[in-house]
Length: 109
Image (cartoon, rainbow, N blue to C red; front, side, top):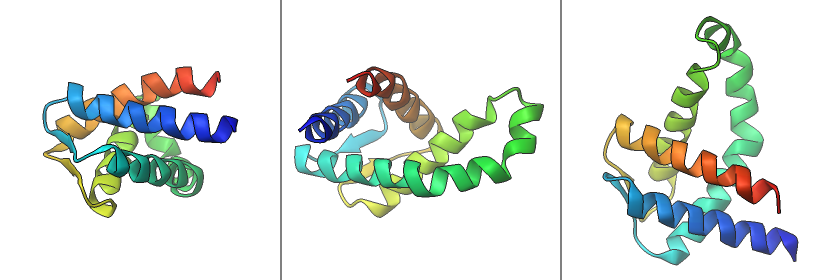
């Protein structure tokens, strides 16, 4: 039950990012639910591998390169999920930042 609540909360977060950030377009709530699954799978499988390879850059930039990685992964979600559009890197950066900040609250559930 708690997994379903977190899934819906992440989908609402994705919808909020689409509403708040110009250049991020989420078609409807069903698309947001699919995007939430894609974000969860990418964060579980792909992100740790990329973070391992990007460790030297993260050390050099004192962790700020993580924001770039999050933006690129959000652009990848937009590429994979039909109905999610991201216009450019800055939109992806702001969208991923909104989702990351709100996901901290979701993780407390």
